[in-house]
Image (cartoon, rainbow, N blue to C red; front, side):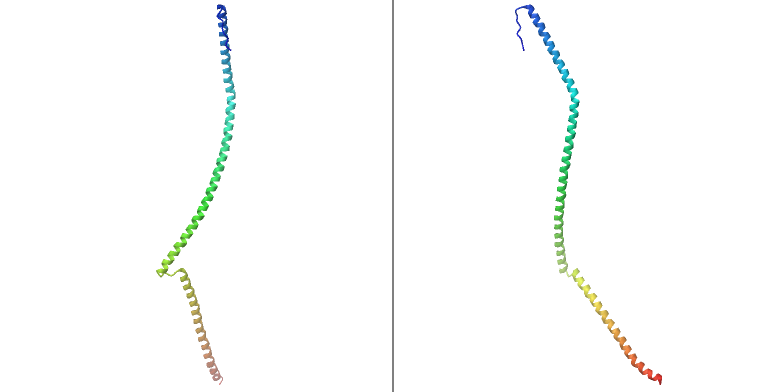
Length: 166
C-alpha cells in the first residue's frame, strides 16, 4: 500500500526517504531470497519431476507399443484371410480356365482326326480281347491235333498188338 508523504517539514522528509529506501531495500532483498528459494526448490523437485515424467513416458510408450502390436496382429490376420479368399477364388478361376482350354484343345484335335485317350483305351481293350481269343483258338487246334494223333495211334497199336502175339 502506498502512503502519501507529507511535505510539511524537511526533517520528516529525510526520515521518510530513509524509511522508504530501507523498505525498498528490504522488499528487494525478500524478492531476491524468494527467487533463490524458488530456484532451489525447482532444482530439488525438478529432478523428481523429471524422473516422474520419464516413468510416465515409459509407461505410455509400453501401452502404445502394445496397442500398435495388437493392431498389426489384427491387420496381419485380416490380410491373411483376404489372401486365402483371393487365392481360393483365383484357383477356382484357373480351374475353369483349364477346363475351357482342355475342351477346346480336345475339339480341335478331334477335328484333325487325332484319337483321344478314350479312343486309345477302347482300342487297347479290344486288342487285349483279340489276343485272348486268338490264344484260345490256337490252343484248341493244338489239342485237337493231339487228340487226333492219339486216336490214330490207338487203332495202329491195336492192329500191331495181335501180330506180335502171333
